[in-house]
Length: 472
Image (tube, rainbow, N blue to C red; front, side, top):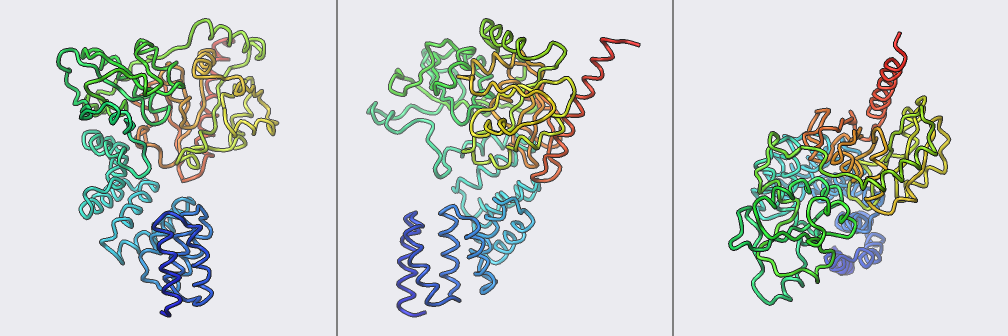
């Protein structure tokens, strides 16, 4: 290696270590121009493209690297990760296994292979890869969290909840309590709650952490916590207040960290299943535990009565989640993929879709009426009120699906091939929401079968309804 090439690679390495892929790329372009067959430069170019969010470029550079240097574990691992994100799981598995075979001690390769195995629903292999990674790096958060997801998905809750506690240590994960909150108090931070009653009626802070769907799901534990007698306060975003005030007095809910009174212990809402020793058999599943405001529900029902003929069934529809969600490319679909549903007779679909995906309604020319309430939904109070006037919700894995389940509104849930852990494996129902039916992809990215299942269910319900109204 020439001195010039070594200097260029050193400069690029410094920029990449500092998280500046754009700063590394000029040096790498120069290096590759000097020596097109320099495998180290090509591999670093693949890493820079990966960090810059250019998967095609990463695949191209990593691919050139392994053609020149088939034993380069880093390039194989990089290809495995890029192919996994692109849904090319067979190729991801092949390169991931090569990386792990070349470098058995490469923790990142084992971790990436665990994620790919989960995406292929090879849960036993995913667990094994995570455990191998943790034997090498016991304090690495990623394999702990991936192990948690695989264990919980397979119903192994006891160990799964313990591993799930590593979620706050993941790189980039916000802490459950902001550091400045504890620093401002000038004392030792209050401990994480261990589930036992606090002495002398001490105050407990619960933090409504993670996504909206998580808060809705785990809010069911609030009455169980209150039954233990602590002076309870809840920290939550403003969006969650319509949900939480149905389960705890509104004056106990704080939207601003600065308004919190002193507290003696704290716990994330998502940590309550572990503290209560939740198993598949003991999930608090009584529904409804949420409901709509009666006056608001009546107002929305009048809107529906004006827009939907009486003989039409009223079915809610949500086909996409937040685009910023890390798994949104797997859980969301395009409106046109729901064509078998939207061809049903005497069914009016009510869109509760918000965000960029709602713009697809402008290109809708389906047979069934599609009423767009999305632009009028101000908050979860509106969403609950609309749901109360519907017969059923058809939805991908979003907060609205959790909301329907918590209200006791039947929900047909469209799930990707490798679903979130809470929907478990294979079964067509959910112990978290007894009113939910689960319709799963049978192959990654293929929505045809679950959509046809829901359409067939709605069609059969319509036939039964017609037979009951007009008996022979």
